[in-house]
Amino acid sequence: VQLQASGGGLVQDGGSLRLSCAASGRTLSGYHMGWFCQAPGKEREFVAAVSWRADTTYYANSVKGRFTISRDNAKNTVYLQMNSLKPVDTALYYCAASPLTYVPDYYDTRNYDYWGQGTQVTVSS
Image 1 (cartoon, rainbow, N blue to C red):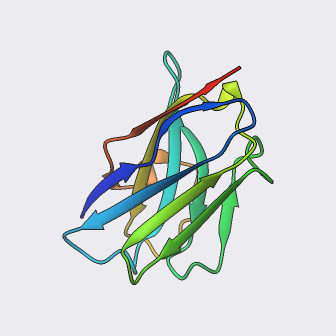
Image 2: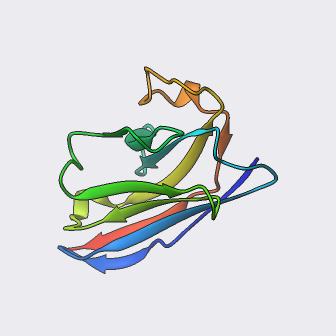
């Protein structure tokens, strides 16, 4: 499956962005999906994840209450709505897909087999 992330950009402190991750080559309906971010000089970090049935979502503590992950399996797309953005959120954001239907370690990059190319989010103060 090929993943294409988009929607990044430059936004001011407190602003909002919606990232999209469109899939091709295979339907995403059976995949557990995640968003990760990587700032310069840092390791890739977990942001949010959603189960393949969209009945369970997971968030990093740093984004709880500000970010919302969702998916539209009919459109083969996963979204990350980012509100109340902060300069510390500045990073390259990646979407990822896991073929596992149950991913207990949803925060671990090693559980995801497919990755998009990343979309840059920059939050100015």
